[in-house]
Image (cartoon, rainbow, N blue to C red; front, top):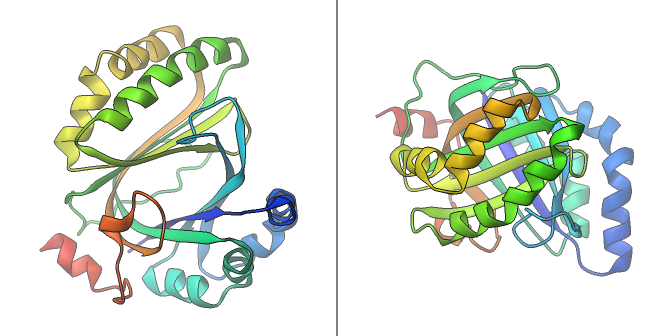
Length: 246
């Protein structure tokens, strides 16, 4: 079963922040060499929950797609990039996931695969990623604050972060919901997000887009908002597959 990980890193103090910023370019070769890695993206974030035109130079993320749980587990435990990031960060966390639904492309690839034995189980992770057309940047970012505020206030949403490879033009939204019904209701029926979605499609805002849903298998580490999902002392292993498909 393919495993997707999203690692979050926060850095305190100018030296650590400068190091983290520099690694957006310098760390790529080491990341690309990790065994069992199919796809990866190193991303920065915006201020607040990430949905801001002001960059947050203290927070960076690494999304990885692995052949299976064994490859993910080995890399998280022993690979140099993860060890170096953890050593410099003042806090970090990694979410482990399995895709249940995916549509679209990311950098021309279809990175996520849905295993035949995987069915949606709450909580549900929603990932949306888009490359915005230059002519649509102003329209998109004018709607972001209201959507972010409404999503953060939704009782069925438990965690949300915006991130991207290139500021303003590339945007990924990552959120955790009670279940698929709650996520879908907000996406399609909320007055802010529902309207934005319809405009985006009607007016052709995106040069490329991807929508994916995941089962959350576990969280390792500590991060504000993720406490309830933390795996604790129990490591996430391949038997999570049988648990989620039961």
